[in-house]
Image (cartoon, rainbow, N blue to C red; front, side):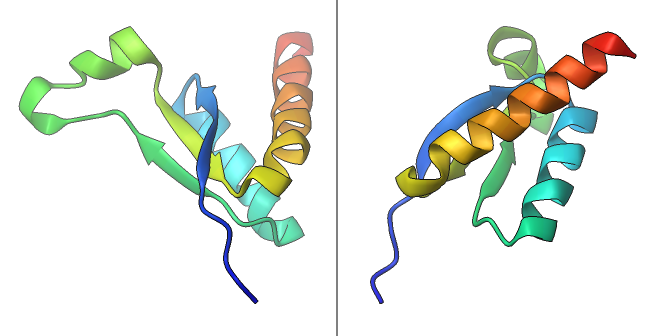
Length: 79
């Protein structure tokens, strides 16, 4: 079975959102990679400009991940 290349799916707003999303995706067995924009040399400057980081995944999982992230954000706004 050939492995799909990963694409950038969405920008993550903060570390808590990234951890929660990563936990849900791991639990569901959804392939993904979460990367922070933090760079110690620039003391997090890029996180201010670009967001906390991003999630990448195979294109076939993109829509599912976007839906899960939307649910997380909606629940966060309701809290």
